[in-house]
Image 1 (cartoon, rainbow, N blue to C red):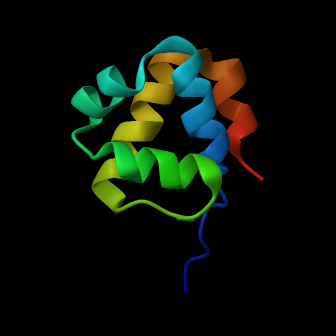
Image 2 (image 1 turned 90 degrees about the vertical axis):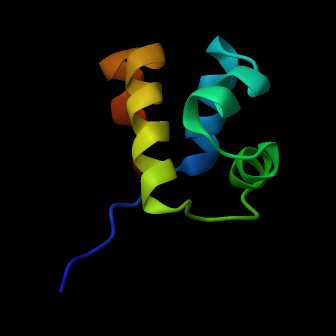
Length: 73
C-alpha cells in the first residue's frame, strides 16, 4: 500500500549530536539514551512513530533544511 520513506536514522542522530548533547536530545525527544545510541550504530533501524516525528522536527530545527534533505537514502 504505502512505501516507507527511507531515512538514515544514524545520520539523523550524528547530526543532532553535533548541535546538542545526548542528554539534551533525550530531554527534548522524551526517549532513552539507549534508543539514540542504537539508532546511531544501526542496531535499531526505525524508531516508534512518535519518536521519529520528534527526531525529524528537532533535526530540521537544529540542522536546517539543507542538511535535513541529506538524511534520506
